[in-house]
Image (spheres, rainbow, N blue to C red):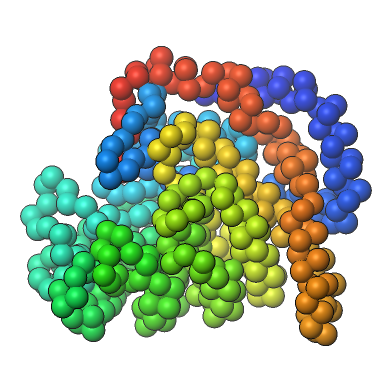
Length: 424
């Protein structure tokens, strides 16, 4: 299903008067509104191919109907999102869930929808039907050299697929670890993992980056071999200049100060990018900004400050991607909400009076520092975000138009009610 531009234009025409009224007020409240709008226009968030279908729990998965049955249909779905919000201009693939049968044709289809390919993701946390050895006791850390070799070769295969599609980065997330004390020699597991990562790193083209993700627990609940940002940082420091830590907002122990982690990684030039989501208890993979919008704002506050300090391009020098699971929501609606939540947090962070904040910090005026940040967070930036979409050619109310056009109903009619997307 493709969304005709005239339908977006009609939708915008109907909402334009109210939008302009709200925008006029927002611009009067936000000093650098025009610069913020342009940064929002430039900012793109990659959509993961595995998040286009319904997620699941350990106990069940309840498909919502009309899920994409192929990589081509996944690209079409991301194209729909991008047409609506003009901020979802990239797709991130997970191999082997989404191996292109014809890379040239897939690349052409993506371009037709205005999309490029973001980081490609390897999968050594599941056993595939045709693989020789099992990852039950780990992959890159495994005590069996044959298993490690198989996992290394898989990552190199993923790089080759990425090269064909024009991607320039590889994301490695490992479920490697242990469930019980004594099961694993921690030092040997670290050394095996580092040696394996060195081989994968050496196979990357010179213009590629490696993003090493971390996670505190799950599916191994006693130890994880890349368990936190410090462990990831230790690996990427040893790997080389093109290896970076990737932050998934759900991959921390409760109440972790993620904004401080972000600030330090950025300062050390080892922050590679993000997997955006939200959580209440653990790695819940909920809609970005749904549970902890102030934390998301504080993270972006550190990002804006740190990127500006280093002279980085906000849109291109870090990797931005959603990683969510939609257990009870329509996946496309959830992704629209996540992109909106991310863009709002980014806009609020851009509106922070940096000069005033630095002056207050310099004299330890704690109350003033808090007021400056909370004033920015409490500022309604929805009209600013909507204006950026409008200028880029998107819809003023993407979710409203999605429902008005009955997109999900049309996808069900086209694909069927019982389709299930590949992935988790």
